[in-house]
Length: 500
Image 1 (cartoon, rainbow, N blue to C red):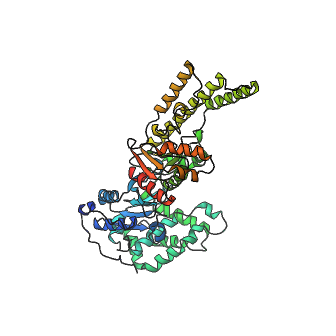
Image 2: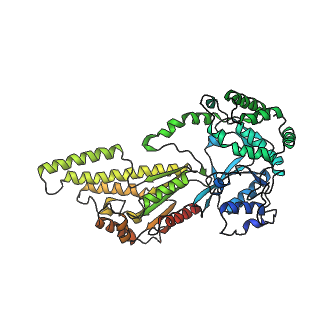
Image 3: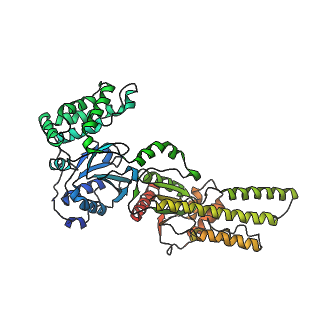
């Protein structure tokens, strides 16, 4: 028997309630449930509600079937709660199904809401089927906690058809039964116990006359232990034949992408791998993390990449150490040879050749940073999120910027040296501001205590350079990096998600 939601929520039509704030104490999933009920939106959680621990802790998706006439109100309700529309790659888009992502500050995770305005069975990678029975399923849905759910008969019907379409020919070639079949046994038993067989047969005839009751029983039998693998495949083929009226074939680009996935994952030139995932409808963004040595930039950047990369196209980039181009490698090799020559000649001071090659290497580094920045901008223009360490903004040029700002390679004095410095400055001037600048601020003494793999005087001097910077004109978000990592990450997630 279903559990009725604790507490009552007065349902109202329209968007009058959509402008009232919700209590911060409630988790994001609970806020979604309350807001949908308050807005009078016709919906139900059509699958996965039995695995409450997964989606309530944001480890699994939240699949909601929503009345398509309420699509705009549904989007407004979720946007009010901080959700953002996320769009998959073009070859993975399924008509009638969209995704929203929201930050649950208490959990520190992204909550993924799948909004199904069409009831679609199957995967976007292959043939899938739109069953035009959404209204009947929604009308018979039951008020349970925290989301409405389909009637037991509708839920069993959809569950059996959906799982039958998962049978694969490769499963027949393996010894033993597929692991996913064993994992669905408890759910299948629960639904069979709750559903009334006569009502189920009646609903099947009414809603899906193309699927005979006898075929449905075969589908049900194919999900039980001990069923022959050949029988399972034959049942799937028979079901697909009966559902051909509702068939939607994936575009050719989807099939080609699926076939090319191993090669795409292997890598592209320059280390820019193909990334799966969605992008936000509002577009991509370049996020810069700036801070002294010991502020935790690498740790925070890695954690942010893992957090966002589970759902969105995310890339972590270190602009302080860009991939070296051929010109940089050749210049560096020439510099080593020139230094060895000076050592053999036992010169007390670097020769003019070494001085100019040192300056030329800084110019090459500036060019590498600019080229990497250009790739980052193109990635963001395509909807990706780029998390950048050691971003060369003017306020931090003393740590990552023109050689003159760092007091390096100053010995070279000639018309050629002047031209090289001007060229280097031009490259840095062409690196624009990030969309979001986050400064991890830490006291110099604390930075020394953290950064133990570098000389203390070196770390202290660099930390003081950033500690004395006035960030008021840089539109930066200042984060106290001296706190425990969990507190720092919570603030970073808030600032980042708010800016997207």
